[in-house]
Length: 311
Image (cartoon, rainbow, N blue to C red; front, top):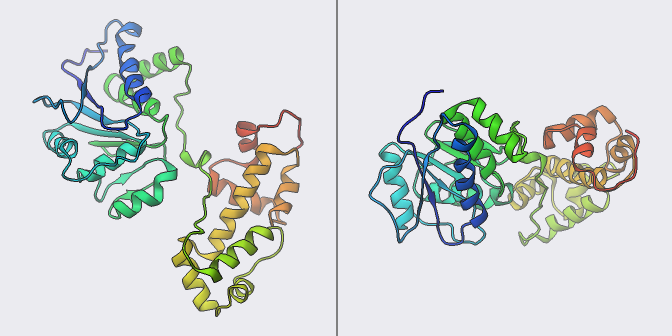
């Protein structure tokens, strides 16, 4: 492969940054010339609000954060990121680092991802971003966002492939013992229903759904439990939870099914029935639509019980 000169990468050391990701990215790129003698990796520079070199970088990365510092549009680092991107730098983030790209105005109208647990917070701060929290990594040409705390590995491999080609990715993956295949955050994310909305009627309906998942549940009956008309219940439920009653119920059932697939020895058919699906193919379709995996594949990947099971 032809050597690519003058590639420079800035790793942003902002308050609360995950140091293992910061140094992990630096270590990953330092391996490139060791594994491929005809290729030099990018020149790595650590930058911070106190140390912003007057240099135009090829790319910069905001790694994950272990704190709540999300950055604002007036922060020096956000302004620096905006200037770097305007000068042609590739803007990258991992996990909560996406908040800094959002603060810099680099994600407006774009597809982007962040950690699945930050989805609602991110959407509140940046409603104009086309957030796709189910994705591990989104490459939108001059902006790349990656999802979870460990997605810095995905980003590092992706940048290596983009700059140096697939053979480098293969060598890095073998050396690091990681799977370079594409993943999705929805394999790992869990359903976290909002119960802090202050609507006692809707909360009663939510509790009823959680306690009677195996039974047929229809909106008309739930509306009675909430002491509302059906129309009012549907409107208030969506406003309080962010879901329609049907979508909320499906999410509850799939979350319970995930837990049982991970922790129990029940068959897929038994789990399907226990969470309210009497039609096994319908359950499998719904499960895959939420998690991206079939129930059997999910169990194979995430099972915690050592006992054998029957599909």
